[in-house]
Image (cartoon, rainbow, N blue to C red; front, side, top):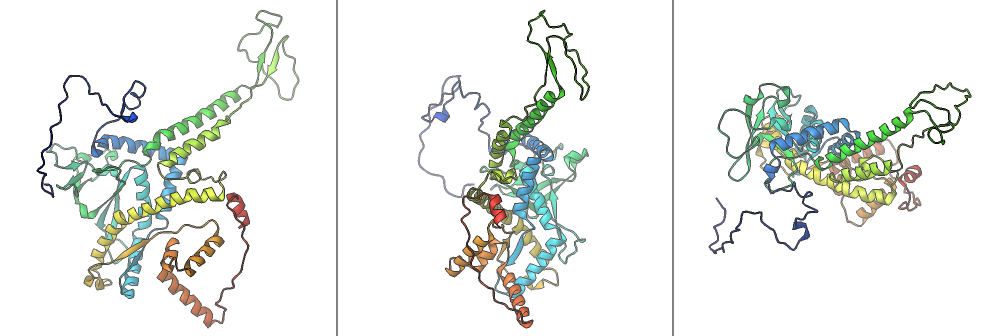
Length: 483
């Protein structure tokens, strides 16, 4: 079973603990001490494995609550949409890296046509949103003769609820992790996919299909070794989303309660004093724009609705900042508000966010796009249009995603020219920053220059020197106005 021989060294047997009471852990670390003060805080800490901690019931409850929060909380919905749009964008683009340029362009054009026919970009955005809300997403590579492409392959999205062990009167499958059957080395072999969604209230318990792992794409973030199912990425923020909504509703309710009372009558006289007697909680009707005489000894006071409180905006900012942290989002992106940022702090926060996006796109390429491309190549070789691929054993390639726009295009252009002139970068790298293929862009530029020369138009660009002020201490609004 083990790939290496067992050690022949003898091991000392550990002394057994005696006594019926609980063990007392003696450690030099304060966090390992259990005291009366921290006992309740660590009461839910356990030693469960990754799959046991993410049991089917636990994941089902987390999915339901995450979907509810995203469907009803504008911040949660906006955060999930922003992550999907920034990660997927308008869709990935394939660049083949073989030595045959003609074959590269042929395959790239054919894959782009197929991706458009099956709405691949839209499906990838849906998968990214499901990964944040459900914790995982599945897709099955199936044959679809109705695809408007020579390659009749389609990508069918499967919700996480449908990948589950069927509750039928049968012997349990060995190494089955809620619908994922593993081999002796822990690799997925078969996925059990229910034919109907459990929420359809159908007889789904006895209707399922075992699908080979080669045809299934499973995308999730593995947080622990040995983890085979994912949990929602917004799980740590779910209680905070609830607190944010409760606090907002409480502020509105306090303001409405104060506004419901137009005015009150009060007196400084003692009880049974000189003031004229009135019935408690009696209502006095006041006409608009009319002067009136109050009872003897009574004065008219108006309630001021001092809502929202001064700490309302600060509370929302801090709790949104905490919510966005588990998703590697800066506050200004989570709140879609950069009013409190200057240029330097905005750039600094965006660097961490864009790095997490690049990591996510790399994971997407390895876990989703590469299996799709392998399946597409296998089907494309059988078509007359791409029969030339049969002789190729390996197809080195890379994926391009949408680039990010710079806040100050002039500074970025100057920095780009400096990097190119000092040979510290390449055209391929600079175009990749914008999500473009350098070969395609240079061919297009060559066509434009040739046409301009044919029409007698000037092809040179006049270099202009502009004095740009340092906007490090300026706000984002000032930078936009200057641009």
